[in-house]
Figure 1 (cartoon, one colour):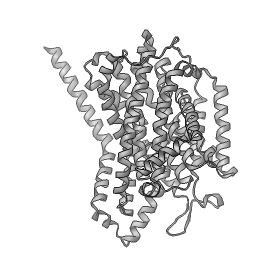
Figure 2: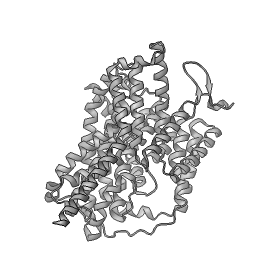
Figure 3: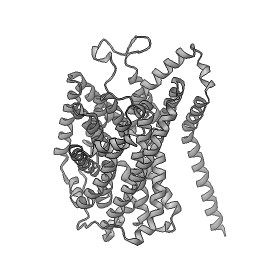
Figure 4: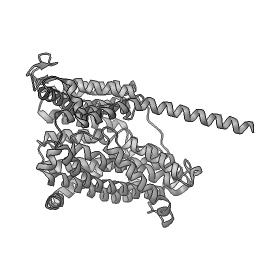
Length: 505
C-alpha cells in the first residue's frame, strides 16, 4: 500500500501533471492526424527524454499512448478518416451518425466508452501486474525462452495482410538483434568491421526510422485527400437511454480489450475489431450496425482503450511488449536503466504504480480535452502535408542524433526508414520487426543460459511443465490463422447452403 501511495505522490507533483497534460494534448493531435500514430509519436519522444528523470519520462510516454488511441476516434467520426488503425471500426457507425446530424452524440459516446475501457483495464493492470510478476520470479532461463518464443509466435496475428509476412518481419528483427558481441561466447557477429555495431543495433534510431521515416516516405506517395468535414459540432454526453444501451457493451468490450492487450504482440487494433464484432453479435439491434448504432461506437472504443492498460501488464511484469507502442516504452525503460520484468515490480514497485497513476490521470485529461476541443482537432487534418512531413523529418534527424550524439545513428535511422517504406509497400508492417528486435535478445540469451544449465541437452527443456505449456500455445498460435480460415470457409459454405435451401423452398 505504501508503494501505491508513493507512486501516486510522484505523479501528483505539479511538474509531472503538466508534462502529462502536454503529452495528452500531443497524443490527441497525433491520434487525430491520419498517417501519424502512437508508436511513431512515442518513438520520436523517446530520445528527448534521455536527460529527464525516469518517472516523468515514462509517464509522458504512457500518457501519450492512452491519448493517441482515443484521438483517432475524433476524425473517424467527423470526417471518416481514422487517425489511427484502432479507430477504423469506430468509423463504421460513428461517421453515419455524424452525417445524420448527431456528431456530438457520437463523440460523447466514444469519449465515455474510451475512458470507461481505459479505467477498467488500469485497475486490472493494478491487480494483475504484481501477481504476474510474482509468478514470473520463479521462472528460470528455460521458462523465459519458451515465453519469448510464444511471444514471437503471436506476431502472426498482428495487423497486416499476411501472417507469413508478419513472421518473416519478426525473424528479420530477431536477426538484427543478434548483431554485436555475443554475451556468452564473446564472439563478434554481423559487425562488418564497424565499431558502432559491437554493442548491437541501437533501438532508438531503428524505432524512429521504421515508424516515422517509413510512414513519411509512404505518405509522400499519396495524393492530398479531400475530406468532408462535419461542421457545427457540439459534443453531448450520452443520455440515459444511450447508457442503457451501451453499458453492457462497454463492460464486455473492456474485458475483451484488456485480455487482447495482455496477449503479447496483439494490441489495440485487434481489440477494436473484436470489440465491434462482439458488440454486433450480442446486440438486439443488429440491423442498425453500419447506419449509426451507439453500440457500434462503444464496442471498439472501449476495447481499444482497454488494450492500452492490458498491454502494459506483460511489458512491466514479464519484459514482453504487449503492443508496438509498449515495445517502444520497453526500450525506454531499458534506456533509463530499469530491468523490465519481475524484478521491476520487486525492486521498484512505486515506479510501476506511478505509471498506473499517469495513465489514470491521462484518461481523465483526454476526456476533458476531447470533449472540449473535438471541433478544433477535426480541423487539424487540414494542415498541409508540405508542412507536416518536413517537420517529422527534422524531428527524426534530431531524435536519432541526440540519443547517442552519433552521426552513425542518423544513418541507421535513414536506412531503417527506407526498410520501413519498402515493408509498407509490400504488405509488411513495422511492428513485428520491432518486436523481433526486442525479443530476439531475450530469446538468444535465455536459450544460451538454458543450454549451460542443461549441459547442451536441448531435449531437457521439455522436462518443465511451464515450457511444455508455452510450446503448446506456440504451436496453437502458429496454426491458428490456418484453423480460423478453414472455420471461416465452413461457415460461409454452411450459410450458402442454407441460402440455397431457403430459396428452393
